[in-house]
Image 1 (tube, one colour):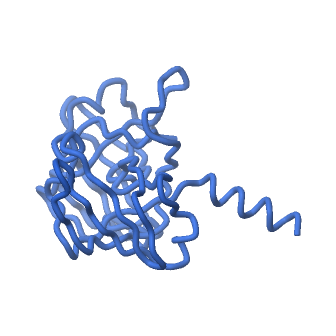
Image 2 (cartoon, rainbow, N blue to C red):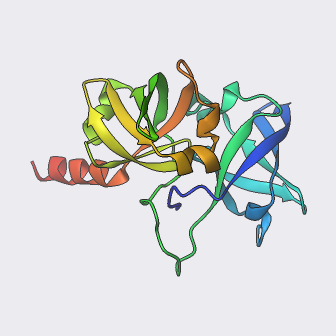
Length: 197
């Protein structure tokens, strides 16, 4: 479980193809504190298990299902990624409860200056839009963000200067795919109501 508050931006050092997936070696600093083999780290919002770590890097293995659901298969060596360690039970949740279980990708359609912010429009699968509501939460590349407005297959987010400064948002451009996780609460409510019908 994560909060969607990015701890640091890491860099993909190497990408190794395996018969059953991909191994990323990621250069980092802050998220390596107290990290051990078996720990969970959200890499651009995808919960991945640490299989090796040292003082400057860690390895995660990405399975085919994760590659199908996320944008991780598009990354190259040298790309930057948002990183967050799993939540401690005694900490504050600054964003919302993020599982790190990416539902799909969303496409950046447009980015337009809006005061100091950047109003950004994303296109998402229509089937997921029932879980995306104005002033609700989504996680994009692991960032807990507030939805401004929605349509049948799109939603908007206002990206504030702080978010652009401390995450990978500064590298975003129209046409890019980002990892999307909708708020799990909506899914649970829908399933509970369906079971009562």
